[in-house]
Length: 179
Length: 179
Image (cartoon, chains in turn purple, red):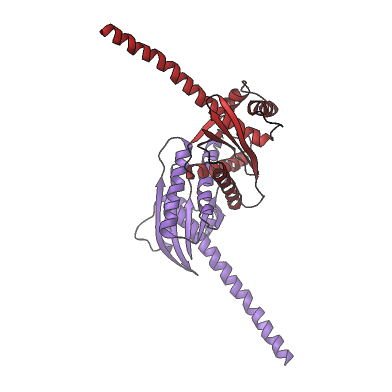
């Protein structure tokens, strides 16, 4: 299962791609789409084309975007909302299921502590994916999104396996009693 | 020149299509894309698919979206930003130039008064396009965007024609003096 994490922004939009096989994670790619200043429509077009290029090149199965909360600056909130809308629209237009997690959930999943600093997220992303160097903050955030979703998937699978066990036993013992 | 106006929102996104031939305007179509409540990604997908359908059906040459300002409610600002991002991304992905005007500019162009009420915009849109009935508020706002851009285009053309005249005369008189 190949997961694409996106960290949307109107100046830079980070992306990170990982492969998840149960609890095993493998780094595929990461980077930053840089958006030139100017009018909004061409900036959203850059996000759209950049993410489109990532989808064509890495063919992910699902995508993850962080849930954002309103900023202290309302103008920044509007700008971020537009960048986020462009990113999610490109992903759903590409036929990908898009999952959303809060920053708290992502940091909890990656660092084990919901209030972790950006530098801690970068360090743990490097460690979990066995990267030779520290990823850039934007790429680290995008990779952290993907890792959070991979862990959530592994957890769901583990819970399903665990709850399938007694049910299977129950079925067998009932069959036993029927003999 | 066929112009598409879009009034983006996460519950309803209005659209209006007009043909502009200099100062002459002709109504083509208008309507509302209704978005079912639920998670954000499928809602943005509905906006994307709805606008995509309008683009295929009416083949506009350019698009217009109102510039929004931050709302008193920051959460609403974020939601509107995301809807707006989805709409503009779909338009630029479709290869359309996207123009933006403030509500003040749009009301000024349509009603002649920047602080006009919604009902005045509806009434003037009906009159300017010779519609048999009052358009819905969402459709009226979208049509008003398109009308504003058509007027700006007609004005630009008129100014260009006007300023071309003295330049042409100047050239002729200069040529005259050279004889």
